[in-house]
Every structure is written in structure tokens, then in C-alpha cells.
View (tube, rainbow, N blue to C red):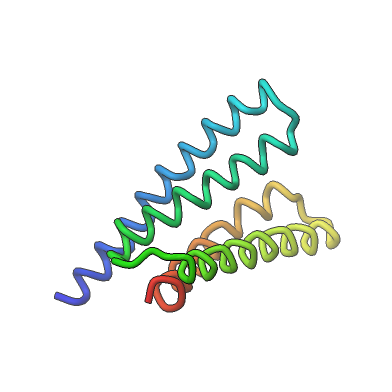
Length: 124
């Protein structure tokens, strides 16, 4: 039963992640038409953060008490993942590997880190 629950949780994490990505991307695309790029990207990341905190906490990990302490851990994880993403892309670009290719290839790694970190640290 526990294995079935874990697989369901992973599928739920991926499914809600796709929904969060779609909402965030639609907001970003519309925002880019009406506001400066920096503002549009910051606002879309903020929306991604808020939606992700709620849906991963409540829907995926069934965490009952979403509070400021848990949000700070979620925010810390998001910052670490953003910095890791940026750093890996820059490092590989330095060695001549295309930024877009690198970004596409590291997504599964970042998703895995995110899932394990949320499960074992943020929403534990």
C-alpha cells in the first residue's frame, strides 16, 4: 500500500507541477505584452511560488498546517533551486554547451530535487 501511495504522490506532484507551469506561463505571456520583462518575470515567479506552495502542500503532500514557518522553508528551497538552475546553465555555457539544451536537460534533476526536498524537508 505504501508503494502505491508513493507512486500516486509522485504522479500528483508531476500533474500539479504541469498545471502550475501552465498557469504561470500563461500569466507570463500575457504580462510580457503589457509590462516590462523584469516585472513580468518577477510577478510570474511570485505567482508560481504561491500556487506551488498551496497545491504541493495541500494537494500533493496533504500537509495540514501551511504556515509562515513552512512557507519560509518552501521559499528557501525555491531560491536554492533557482540558483542551482542558473549556476548549472552558466557553468555548462562556459564550457560551450547551449543554454537552452542545458536548461532542458536539467529539468528532471531539478524536479527530482524539488520533490525529495518538499517531501523530506518542507512538508515533513
